[in-house]
Image (cartoon, rainbow, N blue to C red):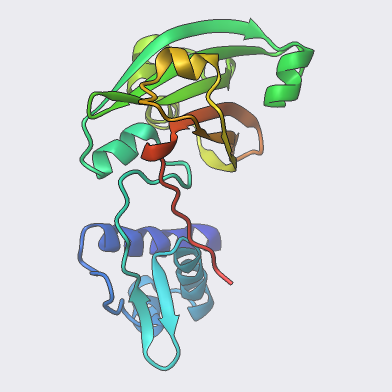
Length: 236
């Protein structure tokens, strides 16, 4: 019960930040005000505020209150579990997805080492080419556990797999571990991306988990280096 109350406060504040009710560099309601609004303890309010601070949305100033942090705009934000569709719409980008490969595979030893899925599991392997402003700049090499994404089709994958999982199947996605490297383009990058003479791609390896701890996705996103922006917030 306590968990749902602090998340209720978290979502309330986040929504008011996103819709501009709480603008950047302005104070949000005090802990006492939030405590009275939601009829909870100050510890519950602080838990919500701490979570928002760890997301880079709020900053506490001793003796003055809690303020909405000013966001530095970026062209494409890599972080959290935000989907390509969500990030593109948020940044008002003209985007398109094409799918040259959509196949079913059985995990062998080689795939096990690459994806960490158990040997013998059935998975979907999808290659999605992401086009932004008429340039093919991202190659997503996706692997999904078939039993989790049962019903997935190429047309759904062209739109948003996460939207399908969360809104259609009611699956709760917990989070993801991301590993970032910069490497020369491989043969698939050269085949599918508009490299425009770029001799490096930024590769983001993404291990995504459900709220019960199940690994359900492994993705390698290959970004043309001049179109890649990484933004993160680190709390000390």
